[in-house]
Image (cartoon, rainbow, N blue to C red; front, side, top):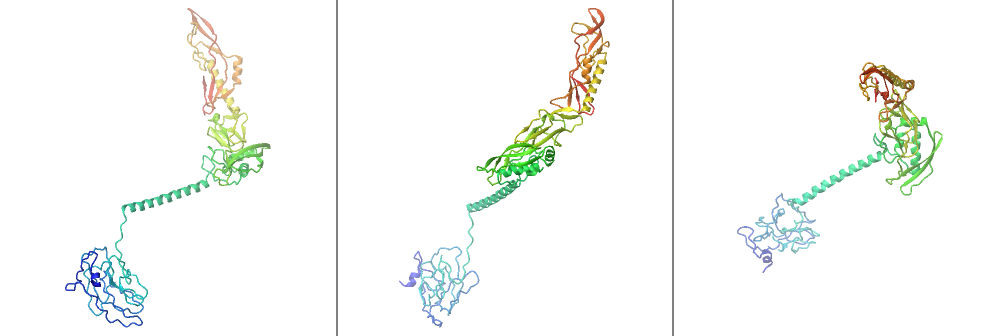
Length: 501
């Protein structure tokens, strides 16, 4: 069997079909025509014709010297070649000395020998080198099915492979994850920035954190800010904002400094080896030496020390409704927090004042001021008003001749022994002691309602009345007559009146 016979049969052993009607079923490769004289390259066969490409013909790259032409041998077609997706076609090569015969079948299957271009200037027959150029002139030959296109033209790309459902889900899920991570990163960054810029304070938003590189610096700078009346800076050294900031103000600190200034602050150097340290500070408060211990910590382990606690408190519930002020600041809460210092309690109501030691001092963290000895009281003018109101009410009740006189001294029509009293015949009088009590009547604000002021016990009046018993009528003296009640007046009212209990 000849070489052409070996080349003509495909993998199934079926002889190739003729390239066109009337053509021989198995043409023999013609003898190489006269080669062009291209010194110094030897004479080589012409490149075989190749199938037409779908696009405009592209002339393959030429060797440095004009290559000799190979015989025009049409490619052999297999009887039933497999259909390749988007099989590339090479541009048409001009046929030297004859008419181009278009192929009627796809390129020869792999394994059939092809006429190749010379390598290194020498003509060779054999299988193509996958279209890759060799040293010297590039090869020319028909592309084999399934092989890469030959050098000299670009094969068209096949259709892009569609991504599967799993791949699409993976890509979309990855994109969503990236977006979520970006959002979390931005929120975390903003929260960290906000946290670094905030801190301290209370009731009115966080204050910027102050910077203290040691426990001693934190305490020294804290007390110094208080002495200077700088509430905002002082709050920056506290590890957490106080619950109430009503009195954590420059105004309150200025009043405290007028009452009892803080001077000569001395804080020995203290190192925090384990992230926390107790620092003992000494200073003068209005000339009196004070020694206080503060707890400090580097909670975030960032080299910035803060004070735990650092403030005290004043219990104010007993003064509810009195318009309480502390260091000139009106307070409307059961308890307020304060910096170390001195504080004066007062009331803004015109008829009231506070008695007892109205000035309190806070020197220790978490200390609660003792206000048990501070009592609300009427001003002297209001006290005289109270006594006058009570005296007028008592005089009206004593002057009454009826059974129902008021002031707690009403009489029944029949007393316990069966004696009947005649209404309109009642006379009442007060003893000298009762009158003296009225003239110096004490006024005490109620514990649960300090604006409601109560008087003391006054006494019982002497009572006489026309009476009838066992059919006999006469003038009777009433023993154990009801006593005057306890007077009470709301001295915060614009029109106060006396009530009796």
